[in-house]
Length: 414
Image (cartoon, rainbow, N blue to C red):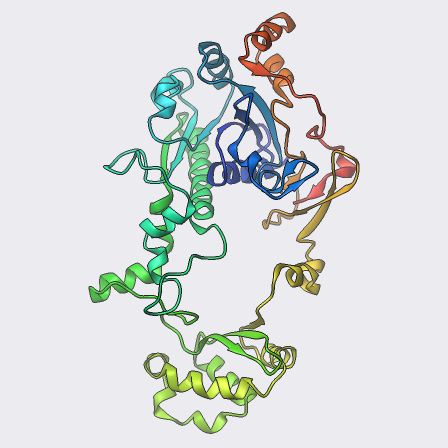
């Protein structure tokens, strides 16, 4: 038995979130992900706080299941190393600005001339072509340029950025999709693909309801605060004890159950609330009724009543409450692995569960160049040649073994 991507070799040239998250997802599924990093600084996210025992928690969260090879890509000797590795690789993943890989002599055309089965995936803010391709972009810029911010926050006020990194994460998921589709194509057709993934376009693609509204009406959709674009009631309500309760109403049956649970059944015959579209038109009236009713309840009590009635509902939780939730505990979403010092380290498992041989946390995030020597040996370099590369500053050898592959008994289900 083996994991789905066992035997797949990925070369990752990436910093911060989008590229590394894609690489980690592939590594979780068994791919051998080799992270190529500058010998002096490594992935730029290594400098991001908070730090635990000198290591960036942000870097650690995005780089498990990888091996680190330190290479100064500006040196011609480093390009020779990469080209030798390309011959035995299946995927090259990079999230530099467009043109950087070309300057390094590692463009898609140059690399695939050595191995045409390679899936070459580039992730960038605005894509590899177009007038904005050279613009730098971080998550906030992606959300602004894609339209996401224009529909987030309270109506008529300055947009509110989402609480999580939507632009980077959506881009990473589409990049993973591109890699997997490319691998399937390479297996069937014998030739890889060149994939161009734009973070802006990933966010635009994910805005299905918003773009549909614009195409249908010709008017750009606006921010709705805590409400839904189509359904009502579908928002947050404050309970008697000052907590917030999310209630969603996807259909007529759910609306009836909400109203009966809140002892508002006398309003079920009101023609303003008789249909999906009527409820959205008269959303303010519905919201006022429910708001007054919810104020009489403790959050935990009304959540229980609504859930028992089959209504989509949840108290708004912080992350401490999330990881203490009985269901999340039962599903083992939070796992612990043995850290470099032998002490337990907390991690969030991969959200995909297979019946067998699923994703796992098999390696801790690596130190810079931790696996340089073993990777170069596997690429055919002798000890003397490796010594020369080290003395020239082309590579750096790591000193700690925290990222070594775990024994089967220590491996955490991810």
